[in-house]
Amino acid sequence: TITNTINNNNTIENVNDVKTTKNTFSVLVPDSEGSTTFKAISFGGTSNSIDMTYNYNNDGQFMVYYDYQTNTVKSRSSENSGIVSLHSNSHAFAALKQDGSVITWGYSQSYENKGGSPYYKSDNDIDWISVADKLTSGVLYITSNECSFLAIKANEIVVWGDSQKGGGPYVYD
Image (cartoon, rainbow, N blue to C red; front, side):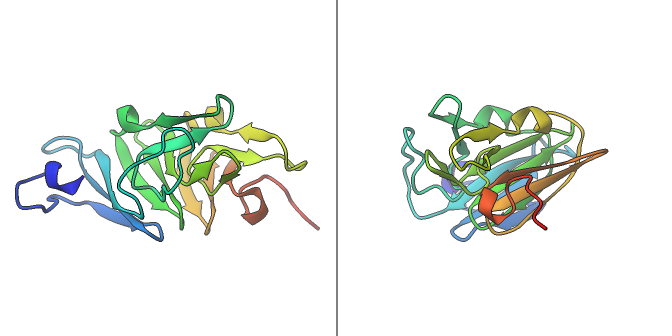
C-alpha cells in the first residue's frame, strides 16, 4: 500500500513514470537512491484483498498473475526490480527489465486473460499457450491494446492476453 512505501506523508517520491489500467495506477520509483532502474508500486483497484486461488478483482493493483500450466496464482514481487519501462492496458501491466526480460501482472483468471499472464488461448479456444520463455530475454519494446500486449524482439514479435483482441498470434485475411 502507499502508506508504507516511501514516506510518512502518504506520498510517493522520485516517481519516474506512471501508467494506469481502468482501475489501478502503477508508478516507477528508483530501485535505490541514484539508481537508473526501477521498481513498480501499484495502487487503487476495485478490491483491497486478493483471491490467491483465482486472481479475481485484480486490474493490476496486486503484482500477481494466473499461471495456466499449474492452475495457481503466482506472485511477481520477487522480480520487481531492474525495470526500465512500464506499460499498461485496460486491465494489466507489463514491465520491461534492464536484462531484456518482461514481467506481467494483473487481470488473468482461470477462464480468461486480459494480459496479466504471459499466455494466450489456442485457436481451438481450449488450450492455453505460454509465451513466458520468449519473454526471458531480448525484448526491445512493449506496446498494448485494451486487453493484450505485444513485445518486439530483434527478429520476432510476441503477443499475449485476450486472443480474440490481439493477444494471440493469428493473422486473418
